[in-house]
Image (cartoon, rainbow, N blue to C red; front, top):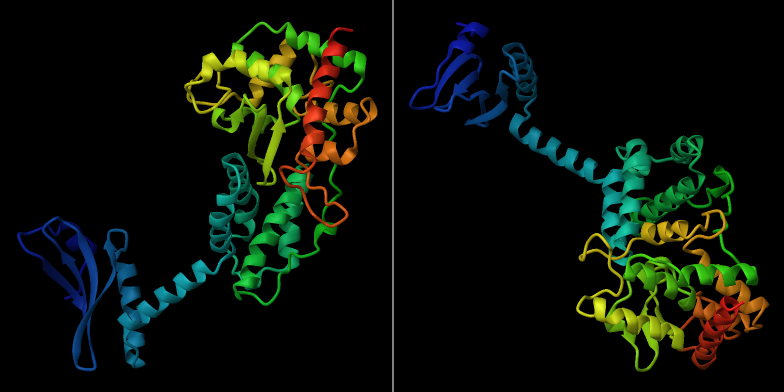
Length: 393
């Protein structure tokens, strides 16, 4: 007699597993916990085998019968249904691991080890928001230029052209991994930058007129607020470094006796040296009693466990009455570069090395930490003295 839905619903658990049969090996198995599993019992090469067809009520009686018929048809063709299912699972797993998203996450695991936490967060966010939803489920070898173009067009239509360029770079890097690991024969993302509008060059706001620089330095000297923020503001114009590099400064990397700060550049992962002027050393010595017992030099005013944030420095400039259109935190590097060249007549290569830029010389040698070090020591003191002169009017 065939099973009915009512019969299955009313079936109650017993002390031991028991079964209700529907015919031709299809049955439902009720365990002591009340769970009801659809099973198919069959003979293959003289051996009894069982396979699961799902759980009731997620799989109804009607659906269980349909699945049962599919498996019986395989058996009629001489195919072992259980073995066929294992093959299908393996193929599905291979396909899943062969998708663009799987490869992208594989690439990201290596990529994130060589960049800052902030950079890795931005990249995985871009992948998950703008790339994986459109390319992620595709098999790597199926991705064509048209697929990449449509993905990028969605971004440019939102006006995020710079992010679209970065997305293309990430797609290129992921498909390059597929190429070198012999999962595809060619990288279709190469030379596709013409698909995108040109990047808009952003010039960070910076004060470079000497008189106005003097006013800026006097305003910074008059800052009344958190002592750590004040020290960071005063030091920023003197060291030529990026905001993050200043905010991540560690006492163990600073030798006040020698007047030298050595660390790894965040952007290029190369070793860098910053000669400290007398003025810079004085600022650090004044701050030392407040943060000497901590790893980092500059801490957040709201948490002793977090470094000073860039927003804090930006807000400090705004509180001083300096509009963001006139001066940004990053603008101190541009200010130093411009005035050292135009007013102090420092050799460009010395300035570029102090900024941490990779500038090949005549022999093709790129940046190294100690190159032009004597000139750079002189530069940093000359620059600090010049700022003092401007500050004095």
